[in-house]
Image (cartoon, rainbow, N blue to C red):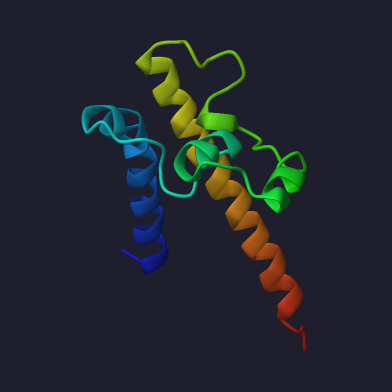
Amino acid sequence: MKLINKLWVGMGILVLISPLGLLLPERFKAGDAWGEWGTDGIKELVGYIPQGLEKLSSLWSAPIPDYAFKGWEEKGLGSLSFAYIVSAIVGILVTVCIVALVGRLLIKKE
């Protein structure tokens, strides 16, 4: 099997196990994933929201917030697992497209 095929199989496995992100934090009483805090989470952790972060927080919102579709936050585990898988696939596709585009721009044609 070629290396690239092994990488795609590995990515597929990671996509399929991505719903563990729903189960494990609840099972181990963990909070949000490291670095995924919003301004509310930072205020809870640190006690205040830094000025710069507060100003910039309105500039960006995630395309698929909380890895779920709008209105799906209260649906069952099956629906949320499906949303996690779709979110993983979208993330992989966006990353592959950006890397391919940058690669084409950097490679000089002879």
